[in-house]
Image 1 (spheres, rainbow, N blue to C red):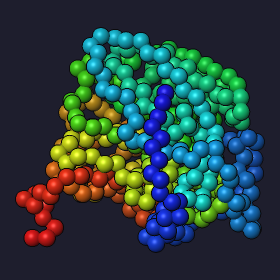
Image 2 (spheres, rainbow, N blue to C red):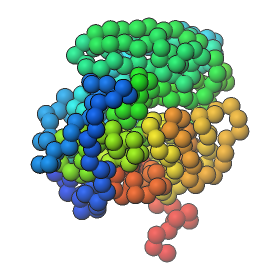
Image 3 (cartoon, rainbow, N blue to C red):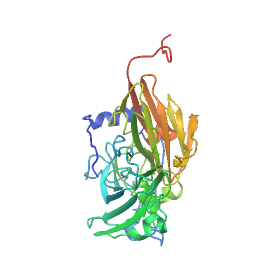
Length: 369
Protein backbone atom coordinates (compact mmCIF):
# COMPACT_ATOMS: atom_id res chain seq x y z
CA UNK A 1 0.00 0.00 0.00
CA UNK A 2 1.12 3.53 -0.64
CA UNK A 3 0.89 6.45 1.75
CA UNK A 4 1.11 10.20 1.45
CA UNK A 5 4.18 11.64 3.15
CA UNK A 6 3.56 15.32 2.73
CA UNK A 7 6.30 17.45 4.24
CA UNK A 8 5.43 20.59 6.16
CA UNK A 9 8.85 22.15 5.60
CA UNK A 10 8.90 23.67 9.09
CA UNK A 11 12.05 23.84 11.16
CA UNK A 12 12.20 21.26 13.90
CA UNK A 13 13.44 23.85 16.33
CA UNK A 14 10.16 25.77 16.02
CA UNK A 15 8.18 22.69 17.05
CA UNK A 16 10.39 22.17 20.07
CA UNK A 17 10.23 25.85 21.06
CA UNK A 18 6.45 26.01 20.84
CA UNK A 19 5.92 22.80 22.79
CA UNK A 20 8.22 23.83 25.59
CA UNK A 21 6.77 27.32 25.79
CA UNK A 22 3.27 25.88 26.08
CA UNK A 23 4.34 23.25 28.56
CA UNK A 24 3.18 20.62 26.09
CA UNK A 25 6.44 18.73 25.78
CA UNK A 26 8.42 20.01 28.73
CA UNK A 27 9.54 17.84 31.60
CA UNK A 28 6.34 18.28 33.60
CA UNK A 29 5.22 14.67 33.84
CA UNK A 30 7.39 11.74 34.85
CA UNK A 31 6.94 8.24 33.47
CA UNK A 32 9.35 6.72 35.97
CA UNK A 33 12.77 5.15 35.76
CA UNK A 34 13.05 1.53 34.87
CA UNK A 35 15.18 -1.49 35.39
CA UNK A 36 14.14 -5.07 35.80
CA UNK A 37 15.37 -8.55 35.19
CA UNK A 38 14.52 -10.77 32.30
CA UNK A 39 11.43 -12.89 33.00
CA UNK A 40 9.48 -15.53 31.15
CA UNK A 41 7.08 -12.78 30.07
CA UNK A 42 9.94 -10.59 28.85
CA UNK A 43 12.12 -12.45 26.31
CA UNK A 44 15.72 -11.43 25.87
CA UNK A 45 15.08 -9.66 22.58
CA UNK A 46 12.44 -7.50 24.28
CA UNK A 47 14.31 -7.01 27.53
CA UNK A 48 14.10 -3.51 28.92
CA UNK A 49 17.40 -1.65 29.17
CA UNK A 50 18.74 -0.61 32.54
CA UNK A 51 18.42 3.00 33.61
CA UNK A 52 21.67 4.91 33.29
CA UNK A 53 22.67 7.44 35.93
CA UNK A 54 24.01 9.83 33.32
CA UNK A 55 20.56 10.05 31.69
CA UNK A 56 19.33 9.07 28.26
CA UNK A 57 21.58 8.02 25.42
CA UNK A 58 21.90 10.57 22.62
CA UNK A 59 19.18 10.60 19.99
CA UNK A 60 19.70 7.93 17.34
CA UNK A 61 20.00 8.47 13.63
CA UNK A 62 16.62 8.14 11.93
CA UNK A 63 15.43 5.34 9.70
CA UNK A 64 12.52 7.53 8.58
CA UNK A 65 11.70 11.21 8.97
CA UNK A 66 8.02 10.43 9.47
CA UNK A 67 6.26 7.71 11.45
CA UNK A 68 2.82 9.40 11.63
CA UNK A 69 0.35 8.24 8.99
CA UNK A 70 -1.39 10.99 7.07
CA UNK A 71 -5.00 11.02 8.40
CA UNK A 72 -6.25 11.68 4.86
CA UNK A 73 -4.69 8.47 3.54
CA UNK A 74 -7.42 5.82 3.67
CA UNK A 75 -9.30 3.75 1.09
CA UNK A 76 -12.29 5.13 -0.77
CA UNK A 77 -15.78 4.06 0.36
CA UNK A 78 -17.15 0.78 -0.91
CA UNK A 79 -18.83 1.25 -4.31
CA UNK A 80 -19.56 -2.38 -5.23
CA UNK A 81 -22.75 -4.30 -4.52
CA UNK A 82 -21.67 -7.94 -4.70
CA UNK A 83 -18.90 -9.90 -2.94
CA UNK A 84 -15.33 -9.35 -4.04
CA UNK A 85 -11.96 -10.94 -3.35
CA UNK A 86 -9.13 -8.77 -2.00
CA UNK A 87 -5.39 -9.38 -1.96
CA UNK A 88 -3.89 -7.43 0.96
CA UNK A 89 -0.19 -7.35 1.79
CA UNK A 90 1.45 -5.80 4.84
CA UNK A 91 5.03 -5.65 6.02
CA UNK A 92 6.13 -5.31 9.62
CA UNK A 93 8.87 -2.79 10.34
CA UNK A 94 11.17 -1.96 13.24
CA UNK A 95 12.57 1.53 12.79
CA UNK A 96 13.83 4.56 14.65
CA UNK A 97 11.92 7.82 14.31
CA UNK A 98 11.19 10.95 16.32
CA UNK A 99 8.42 11.23 18.88
CA UNK A 100 9.11 14.96 18.75
CA UNK A 101 12.17 16.92 17.65
CA UNK A 102 15.30 15.65 19.38
CA UNK A 103 13.48 12.68 20.96
CA UNK A 104 13.93 9.31 19.23
CA UNK A 105 12.32 5.92 19.81
CA UNK A 106 12.45 2.46 18.23
CA UNK A 107 8.96 1.94 16.78
CA UNK A 108 7.27 -1.15 15.40
CA UNK A 109 4.69 -0.73 12.64
CA UNK A 110 2.61 -2.23 9.90
CA UNK A 111 3.83 -0.75 6.58
CA UNK A 112 6.01 1.88 8.22
CA UNK A 113 3.28 4.15 9.57
CA UNK A 114 1.16 4.55 12.71
CA UNK A 115 -1.63 3.55 12.67
CA UNK A 116 -1.25 0.76 10.15
CA UNK A 117 -3.14 1.09 6.85
CA UNK A 118 -6.91 0.88 6.99
CA UNK A 119 -8.33 -2.23 5.35
CA UNK A 120 -11.75 -1.50 3.81
CA UNK A 121 -14.08 -4.18 2.48
CA UNK A 122 -17.79 -5.00 2.20
CA UNK A 123 -19.65 -7.61 4.22
CA UNK A 124 -19.39 -10.91 2.35
CA UNK A 125 -16.05 -10.10 0.73
CA UNK A 126 -13.12 -12.50 0.98
CA UNK A 127 -9.72 -11.24 2.05
CA UNK A 128 -6.45 -13.02 1.32
CA UNK A 129 -3.96 -11.42 3.70
CA UNK A 130 -0.17 -11.85 3.46
CA UNK A 131 2.05 -10.61 6.28
CA UNK A 132 5.82 -10.35 5.79
CA UNK A 133 8.43 -9.95 8.54
CA UNK A 134 11.65 -8.79 6.82
CA UNK A 135 14.88 -10.55 7.75
CA UNK A 136 16.42 -7.32 9.05
CA UNK A 137 13.86 -7.24 11.88
CA UNK A 138 14.82 -8.64 15.28
CA UNK A 139 11.48 -9.90 16.65
CA UNK A 140 8.60 -12.18 15.71
CA UNK A 141 5.36 -10.45 14.69
CA UNK A 142 1.82 -11.38 13.68
CA UNK A 143 -1.58 -9.80 13.09
CA UNK A 144 -4.86 -10.23 14.98
CA UNK A 145 -7.92 -8.90 13.16
CA UNK A 146 -10.87 -8.31 15.50
CA UNK A 147 -13.06 -8.76 12.41
CA UNK A 148 -11.93 -12.35 11.84
CA UNK A 149 -13.60 -15.52 13.05
CA UNK A 150 -10.68 -17.86 13.76
CA UNK A 151 -7.95 -18.63 16.31
CA UNK A 152 -6.43 -15.40 17.53
CA UNK A 153 -8.19 -13.45 14.80
CA UNK A 154 -5.56 -14.84 12.45
CA UNK A 155 -2.66 -14.32 14.86
CA UNK A 156 -1.98 -18.03 15.35
CA UNK A 157 -1.44 -18.62 11.63
CA UNK A 158 0.48 -15.39 10.97
CA UNK A 159 3.11 -15.61 13.73
CA UNK A 160 6.37 -15.32 11.82
CA UNK A 161 10.02 -14.82 12.58
CA UNK A 162 12.28 -12.40 10.71
CA UNK A 163 12.65 -13.49 7.11
CA UNK A 164 9.27 -15.25 6.96
CA UNK A 165 5.85 -14.58 5.44
CA UNK A 166 2.43 -16.07 6.12
CA UNK A 167 -0.93 -15.90 4.33
CA UNK A 168 -4.45 -16.37 5.65
CA UNK A 169 -7.81 -16.09 3.96
CA UNK A 170 -11.01 -15.02 5.68
CA UNK A 171 -14.53 -13.93 4.85
CA UNK A 172 -15.69 -10.58 6.24
CA UNK A 173 -18.85 -11.89 7.89
CA UNK A 174 -19.95 -9.14 10.24
CA UNK A 175 -20.06 -5.41 9.60
CA UNK A 176 -18.35 -2.75 11.66
CA UNK A 177 -14.98 -1.10 12.10
CA UNK A 178 -12.55 -3.15 14.14
CA UNK A 179 -9.00 -2.89 15.45
CA UNK A 180 -6.19 -5.10 14.24
CA UNK A 181 -2.89 -5.39 16.11
CA UNK A 182 0.20 -7.48 16.71
CA UNK A 183 -0.53 -10.23 19.25
CA UNK A 184 2.79 -11.92 20.07
CA UNK A 185 3.38 -12.66 23.80
CA UNK A 186 4.68 -9.12 24.40
CA UNK A 187 1.66 -7.75 22.56
CA UNK A 188 1.29 -4.76 24.89
CA UNK A 189 4.79 -3.59 23.97
CA UNK A 190 4.26 -4.13 20.25
CA UNK A 191 0.91 -2.31 20.23
CA UNK A 192 2.28 0.57 22.30
CA UNK A 193 5.20 0.89 19.88
CA UNK A 194 2.79 1.28 16.97
CA UNK A 195 1.49 -2.08 15.75
CA UNK A 196 -2.24 -1.45 15.41
CA UNK A 197 -4.72 -0.25 12.81
CA UNK A 198 -8.32 -0.65 11.65
CA UNK A 199 -10.34 -2.87 9.34
CA UNK A 200 -13.68 -1.50 8.17
CA UNK A 201 -16.30 -3.99 7.00
CA UNK A 202 -19.02 -1.87 5.46
CA UNK A 203 -22.61 -3.18 5.57
CA UNK A 204 -24.10 -4.31 2.28
CA UNK A 205 -25.83 -0.94 1.83
CA UNK A 206 -22.64 0.97 2.62
CA UNK A 207 -22.22 3.98 4.92
CA UNK A 208 -23.92 7.36 4.49
CA UNK A 209 -22.11 9.66 2.10
CA UNK A 210 -19.92 12.39 3.60
CA UNK A 211 -17.65 15.02 2.10
CA UNK A 212 -14.39 13.84 3.66
CA UNK A 213 -13.00 11.05 5.82
CA UNK A 214 -10.06 11.06 8.25
CA UNK A 215 -8.29 8.23 10.09
CA UNK A 216 -6.41 8.65 13.38
CA UNK A 217 -4.88 6.22 15.87
CA UNK A 218 -4.44 6.84 19.60
CA UNK A 219 -1.89 4.96 21.67
CA UNK A 220 0.34 5.26 24.71
CA UNK A 221 4.13 5.18 24.64
CA UNK A 222 6.02 3.94 27.73
CA UNK A 223 9.66 5.03 27.87
CA UNK A 224 12.59 5.43 30.26
CA UNK A 225 12.59 9.21 29.83
CA UNK A 226 10.40 12.18 30.61
CA UNK A 227 8.09 13.74 28.04
CA UNK A 228 10.13 16.22 26.06
CA UNK A 229 13.48 14.98 27.36
CA UNK A 230 15.87 14.98 24.42
CA UNK A 231 17.80 11.84 23.59
CA UNK A 232 16.89 8.27 22.74
CA UNK A 233 13.95 6.88 24.70
CA UNK A 234 13.99 3.12 25.22
CA UNK A 235 10.83 1.14 25.92
CA UNK A 236 10.00 0.80 29.64
CA UNK A 237 8.24 -2.38 30.71
CA UNK A 238 8.11 -1.04 34.25
CA UNK A 239 6.21 2.10 33.22
CA UNK A 240 3.88 -0.05 31.12
CA UNK A 241 3.11 -2.34 34.06
CA UNK A 242 2.16 0.76 36.06
CA UNK A 243 0.12 2.03 33.10
CA UNK A 244 2.01 5.32 33.43
CA UNK A 245 2.83 6.46 29.88
CA UNK A 246 5.43 9.04 28.98
CA UNK A 247 3.39 10.04 25.94
CA UNK A 248 -0.18 9.62 24.73
CA UNK A 249 -0.19 10.17 20.99
CA UNK A 250 -2.05 10.53 17.76
CA UNK A 251 -0.26 8.50 15.09
CA UNK A 252 3.02 7.99 16.93
CA UNK A 253 4.16 11.61 17.19
CA UNK A 254 3.57 14.31 19.82
CA UNK A 255 1.34 17.10 18.52
CA UNK A 256 1.89 15.93 14.95
CA UNK A 257 -1.20 17.58 13.46
CA UNK A 258 -0.78 21.07 14.87
CA UNK A 259 0.59 24.30 13.44
CA UNK A 260 4.14 23.66 14.59
CA UNK A 261 4.02 19.95 13.84
CA UNK A 262 3.10 18.62 10.42
CA UNK A 263 0.28 21.13 10.25
CA UNK A 264 -3.44 20.91 10.93
CA UNK A 265 -5.71 18.95 8.63
CA UNK A 266 -7.54 21.58 6.59
CA UNK A 267 -11.16 21.23 5.45
CA UNK A 268 -13.64 23.62 3.88
CA UNK A 269 -16.45 25.19 5.87
CA UNK A 270 -19.69 23.30 5.37
CA UNK A 271 -18.09 19.92 4.78
CA UNK A 272 -19.41 16.92 6.66
CA UNK A 273 -16.47 14.96 8.05
CA UNK A 274 -16.30 11.33 9.13
CA UNK A 275 -13.48 10.57 11.58
CA UNK A 276 -12.27 7.05 12.37
CA UNK A 277 -10.57 6.86 15.79
CA UNK A 278 -8.61 3.62 16.22
CA UNK A 279 -7.76 3.17 19.89
CA UNK A 280 -4.73 0.91 20.07
CA UNK A 281 -4.10 1.50 23.76
CA UNK A 282 -2.81 -0.85 24.98
CA UNK A 283 -4.19 0.18 28.37
CA UNK A 284 -5.93 3.55 28.74
CA UNK A 285 -9.54 4.48 28.00
CA UNK A 286 -9.88 7.51 25.75
CA UNK A 287 -12.38 10.29 26.50
CA UNK A 288 -12.62 11.40 22.90
CA UNK A 289 -13.73 14.99 22.39
CA UNK A 290 -13.65 17.64 19.68
CA UNK A 291 -13.13 21.10 21.18
CA UNK A 292 -15.39 23.54 19.34
CA UNK A 293 -17.70 20.84 17.98
CA UNK A 294 -19.71 17.78 18.99
CA UNK A 295 -19.98 14.30 17.55
CA UNK A 296 -23.17 15.01 15.60
CA UNK A 297 -23.44 11.31 14.74
CA UNK A 298 -21.46 8.82 16.79
CA UNK A 299 -20.99 5.11 16.04
CA UNK A 300 -20.00 3.61 19.37
CA UNK A 301 -17.57 0.67 19.50
CA UNK A 302 -17.44 0.50 15.72
CA UNK A 303 -21.11 -0.51 15.45
CA UNK A 304 -22.35 0.64 12.04
CA UNK A 305 -25.70 -1.19 11.96
CA UNK A 306 -27.44 0.04 15.14
CA UNK A 307 -28.91 3.52 15.36
CA UNK A 308 -25.99 5.85 16.10
CA UNK A 309 -25.87 8.23 19.06
CA UNK A 310 -26.49 11.93 18.35
CA UNK A 311 -24.86 15.15 19.53
CA UNK A 312 -22.33 13.51 21.83
CA UNK A 313 -19.85 15.87 23.52
CA UNK A 314 -17.29 13.39 24.89
CA UNK A 315 -17.30 9.67 24.20
CA UNK A 316 -15.44 6.77 25.82
CA UNK A 317 -13.38 4.72 23.39
CA UNK A 318 -11.95 1.56 24.90
CA UNK A 319 -8.50 0.26 23.99
CA UNK A 320 -8.90 -2.33 21.29
CA UNK A 321 -11.85 -0.63 19.60
CA UNK A 322 -12.57 1.88 16.86
CA UNK A 323 -15.12 4.68 17.06
CA UNK A 324 -16.59 6.71 14.22
CA UNK A 325 -17.78 10.29 14.55
CA UNK A 326 -19.41 12.48 11.94
CA UNK A 327 -19.28 16.24 12.38
CA UNK A 328 -20.60 19.28 10.59
CA UNK A 329 -18.41 22.36 10.06
CA UNK A 330 -20.67 25.43 9.95
CA UNK A 331 -18.06 28.00 11.09
CA UNK A 332 -14.36 28.51 10.35
CA UNK A 333 -11.62 27.90 12.87
CA UNK A 334 -9.85 25.03 14.62
CA UNK A 335 -11.52 21.88 15.89
CA UNK A 336 -9.14 20.36 18.41
CA UNK A 337 -9.26 16.58 18.70
CA UNK A 338 -8.30 15.56 22.23
CA UNK A 339 -8.54 12.96 24.91
CA UNK A 340 -10.43 14.86 27.62
CA UNK A 341 -8.16 13.37 30.24
CA UNK A 342 -6.52 16.72 29.66
CA UNK A 343 -3.10 16.13 31.21
CA UNK A 344 -2.55 13.90 28.20
CA UNK A 345 -3.16 16.95 26.00
CA UNK A 346 -1.14 19.50 27.96
CA UNK A 347 1.80 17.31 28.89
CA UNK A 348 1.90 14.11 26.84
CA UNK A 349 1.23 14.95 23.20
CA UNK A 350 -2.43 14.04 22.64
CA UNK A 351 -3.71 16.78 20.33
CA UNK A 352 -4.64 17.07 16.68
CA UNK A 353 -6.28 19.97 14.86
CA UNK A 354 -8.79 20.10 12.02
CA UNK A 355 -8.70 23.63 10.61
CA UNK A 356 -11.99 24.70 9.00
CA UNK A 357 -11.43 27.35 6.34
CA UNK A 358 -14.01 29.78 5.03
CA UNK A 359 -15.82 33.04 5.69
CA UNK A 360 -17.17 33.98 9.11
CA UNK A 361 -20.74 33.08 10.12
CA UNK A 362 -21.63 35.62 12.81
CA UNK A 363 -25.23 34.41 13.04
CA UNK A 364 -23.85 31.09 14.32
CA UNK A 365 -20.73 32.25 16.15
CA UNK A 366 -19.64 35.84 16.65
CA UNK A 367 -16.38 36.32 18.59
CA UNK A 368 -16.78 40.13 18.57
CA UNK A 369 -20.48 41.02 18.99
